[in-house]
Length: 253
Ligand SMILES: NC(=O)c1ccc[n+]([C@@H]2O[C@H](COP(=O)([O-])OP(=O)(O)OC[C@H]3O[C@@H](n4cnc5c(N)ncnc54)[C@H](O)[C@@H]3O)[C@@H](O)[C@H]2O)c1
Image (cartoon, rainbow, N blue to C red; front, side, top):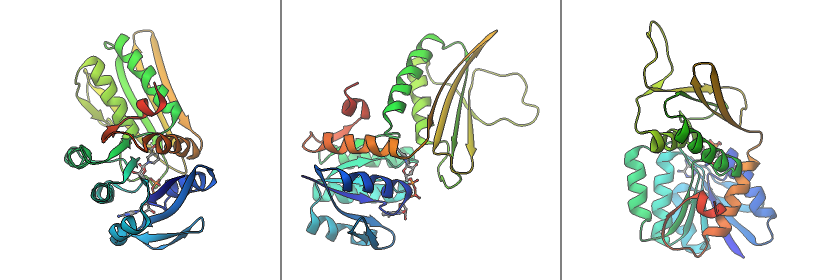
């Protein structure tokens, strides 16, 4: 049995992942951590100030984190102190926070970090890479939409899309929305963020040239698609070597 604990247990993703962990015959849900205590799926949820004593006494094999960036940095440090493997889905890290996380994890614990655990999005990223490779001279626009509670923008998935495109075509100016007398389009990548309702997560990349456009898009209809990928990462990461691993490795892509 793989013992699993979840940071952000009482959040949208924490609850969705907790349900799948609880139902999996080879996984044992041993508890949760959130800013308030309580319980979920018949196991205790402790407050984040108790994370060290929780990890010390319960000794999970894998700690999952779906919180907010500032909290995730602290939770990752706690997991490293206790030698607990990590699966991190939190997005919105600043470049400094990302560097801090890498320093903490390298040489101490194995971790999977991904801005999107959906299998479909990981395939979608590959298609975006292939398109960018061939269509670097087209105008490129990235559009994402999420529910009205989402705190960071653009989404981690959209940032990964931008990284992939720039790995293929080189760094470009990013233009976040347009307004007013902006003049002719330049060589930028336009980035557009929509927030509303209960949209789980939509991402599109538009490649436009004279007389044709190509649009690649992915739409998540249920958070379960992320949670299923998280479960695959949990099973995969247990016992792996220290350092940060990708969903590509988990999925064998
Ligand atoms: N990688 C992916 O596939 C993926 C998919 C969906 C969401 N996300 C990301 O996951 C994160 C959470 O998303 P959500 O929709 O579940 O948000 P949410 O707001 O519903 O849940 C976050 C939870 O974290 C808790 N929390 C805050 N500070 C904490 C701390 N110090 N310790 C423990 N818990 C703490 C909150 O109380 C809340 O219950 C976001 O960054 C989101 O962008 C990633």
